[in-house]
Length: 155
Image 1 (tube, rainbow, N blue to C red):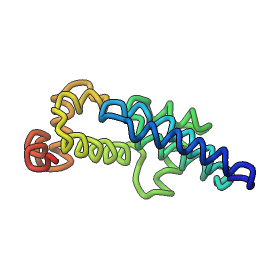
Image 2: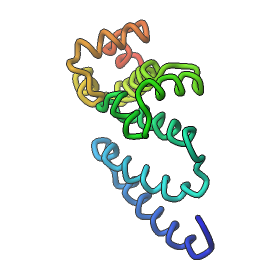
Image 3: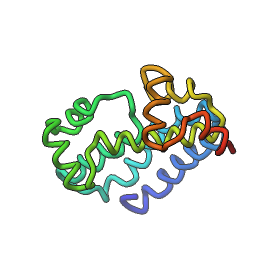
Image 4: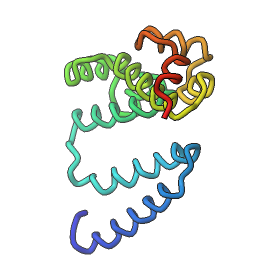
């Protein structure tokens, strides 16, 4: 909120987003996330960190939500070469962007499995080429199969 005049506009915008959230079903919730992202970026833009740190933070947020884009595409869309992105990310966060994305993907998979989605549905939602690849990677990271995780953690 830049000034007092903007408070009303920000509140109105927030109420629209909130009403969409309240009406969202599990399937439509994911389609609302870009709207929330744009709104929060707009409201928080006066407080943004400038320069490479800001670009890196934005790229990190993309890694957490966009599993379809390549790391090279994410780096390029944030005005960095892949090499610069990889080095800066590891220096700032202590983990490579690939490993960070993998952790985020598995955490998202855990959430979706707990909500009752099948392994095939989760694999598709998280852009795995097939359920076998998803299951294999999930088991490597968690020590258990997605099916067993789902059985033990379903809400």
